[in-house]
Amino acid sequence: MRIVVAHNRYREAQPSGENTIVDSEIAQLTAAGVEVLPFIRSSDEIPSMSKTAKALLPISPIYAPRAQDDLARLLTEHRPDVLHLHNPYPLLSPWVVRTAHRHGVPVVQTVHNYRQVCSSGIYFRDGMICQDCRGRALGVPAVVHRCYRNSRAQSALMATTLAVHRGTWRSVDRFIALTSAIADHLRDYGIPDERIVVKPNSVPDPGRPAPLGDGFLYMARLTPEKGVDLLLEAWRRHPVGTLGTLRVAGDGELRPLVEAAAAERADVVYLGQLDRAGVRAAVEESAVVIAASMWHDVLPTVIIEALASGRPVLGTALGGIPYLVGADAPHEPAGTGPAAVTSSVAGQGLAPLPAGVVTGTAGWVVPPEPAAMAAALPVARAGAAARSAPARLRYEQTFHPDVVTKRLLDIYADVARR
Image (cartoon, rainbow, N blue to C red; front, side, top):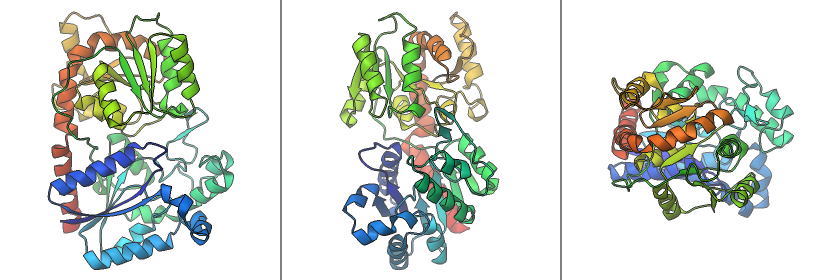
């Protein structure tokens, strides 16, 4: 099988789980014997572009002529079975779907965000969830609120792009929804069920989990939608030292809040931006990983990494997080969902859960509120050991590369056959 993987990489200065997933998926496909033809552009190329190329950048989300020419040559020369698209912005453009179809190549797209509808892609604005552009022919609210790169002009361009390419997206042969929540988003957009497949991402197997450490790890961009401020407010509701150590890794506009918390409390440690070795060490030092997202986070890679290392996760009940930790009951095998786990906890004589805390096979989810997060922290610390083995098992059964790659190959084969 011969597959073109098309992706516009996000800037390296802005660490992206999507870049990591694409790299990992290419490696997994190659290891499975697939001939992968990467069609990759990077936003890091923009500063070194010629003046002419930079002048054309404003229209590239709608139509990127150089990318279409390059892709047409690739398709003509190699005649692939499928083009697998990830992020098309800004240097590829959704027009690559039309280019592929013109050459008789079917298109699969992994949907990593909500950018079929939302100009920012995250359904989040001014500190809260926002879906003002749903159902609109043109996302005027995105322009009014400068949702794309805090620029009214760029927001107008992105809103126009989404309007122009509504038909393009609806022509994609198969959408890979990373969770059931993304599948619902696509249905709401008008995509029929037969063109939606739920398939999560995976991360490489780190091997047998190390013994649990102590305390908690938060590892994400330090931005409002990722909820580090919510977490810190919840943490302050407990006396210093009663929950072990809170380790915070990442960078972003809310870094001063984290640094202030670390200066204020001995049980908060700011680790900065970590490389892969640093991530592995931080996970092993901790007992529970926290995902405090305030938006409908699609599929945080950090959660899959935590499960692979046998670390249960405490997260907010938004987006794909309940699915990841096994608190999304309709998608759990019989006898393994939250009801079964709650019965097991009751059988162990543990105290009833605080209001709002839902237990899954591999962790806990709570409403995105400081009080609920604060109530869940001691529950997660006390229950970490009991959730460690189920967390690893959930990874092995659902998110392991062998499982996920087989599913992806089946999708390619079905699309190519049709």
